[in-house]
Amino acid sequence: MCDIQNYSSFLAAILVFQLIPGAGTLAILNATARNGVAAGLGAVFGTLAGDFIFMVAAAAGLAAIMNANPILFQALQWFGAAYLCWLGLQLVRAPVSQDATTPEPLKSAWRYFRQGCAVSLTNPKVVLFFVAFFPLFLRPGSSHITLVAMMAHVTIISLLYQAGLVFVGNAVACRLRAIPSARRIATRLAGIALIGFGVKLAASNR
Image 1 (cartoon, rainbow, N blue to C red):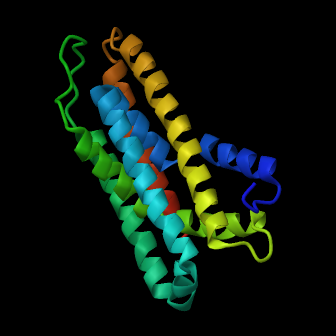
Image 2 (cartoon, rainbow, N blue to C red; image 1 turned 90 degrees about the vertical axis):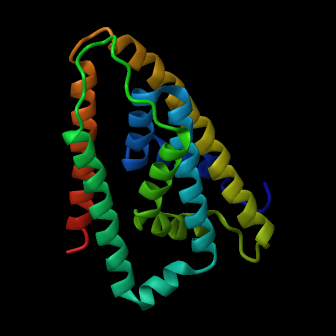
């Protein structure tokens, strides 16, 4: 389809990529658990925006520029690691009421959109993934339309999967609200996991 070779494998690879949990997935689930479906979808569109920017950058040859300027790539890695750790610390230190009747402070979907986009954009491994991923399924001599079609496939499948994650996560969060300590534990675990992603990214930059 559209000069995409091994089309079924291409679709399967996108699904596998989505199923691997990462900082973006965690940001979506945290937003959903704290402020509901609207916040979760805000984070979804934020991560999709970041991924789309990286897809365009990969197509434009940003990876070649980074390879020619390793200091720039390392700086982006360190910035990404610091940002993830900062987000995690905010969750670890945030006061969380154990009273199930006390709602979370309401934050706008736009705020979670910005967080999701920032989490995606500060992970330089995403652009490297797309640089390595797209050529595997491009036929020799393929037109630019094929690359556009591949980006559309990634975006649509990611949207469907991540939106489903929001609705499932919201249903689970609603059930957990009846457990007094669930909100505090989930918030702390989300913070620790984000710090872990940041430390892992920093370690890979050594």
